[in-house]
Image 1 (spheres, rainbow, N blue to C red):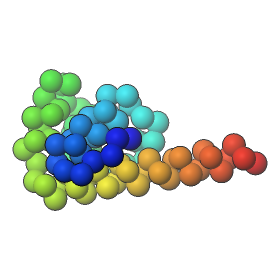
Image 2: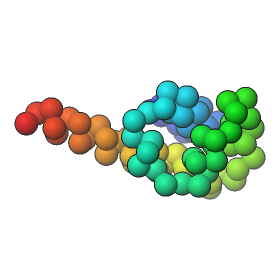
Image 3: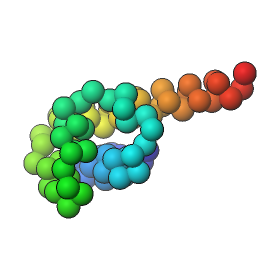
Image 4: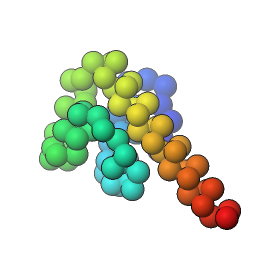
Length: 80
């Protein structure tokens, strides 16, 4: 998951995660993520650009949280 410091970087990070169909995405429950995954790849960025800054921030934080949860769980399980 890419780091982000503004809306455009967050969108790039979100699109990258969706494009690569990261295994931890199924843990995310955001309506915006579900809608993004259903859209044609060409429409995804436009859809996300039209969301408010707060919606993008919330979505990015949810994805980032699930990403780190996944990393922590897989790291913990491989050390057992």
